[in-house]
Length: 170
Image: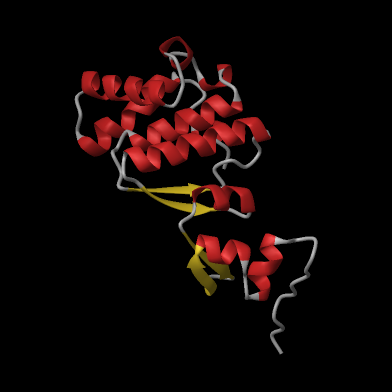
């Protein structure tokens, strides 16, 4: 799902970002709004931008707003599923830098689901490679990214160099 699809097109982004603080942390509407404004500012979005409906924001702005919305509930673990899919390389870099900063400053655990080697290299301390739901490889990111042993891991890291076929059911 894209960031745009995760927002109600008729409600201002600020209202939607504040909602998790109200629902999940039982914050008052004023507290939730203050929290949302702080988080939105932290991810680089000004109040005049987020008081608009989602269709007025760019894809990168909506990605950042979705991140702020997720943080409004003060999670300890944040699952990022293809967080930068569909973004241009400059916007992707900004999102990854922001995620890394938030991970460190808020002491978040990130679970990053991605097929993009650069995303994994930027954010992962430990990598688990799945094939149809089964763990086929795991280890420290530095080791797997530089010296992968499993054929699927090598194919994911170097898609032009290897071909992986699905196991036969016979």
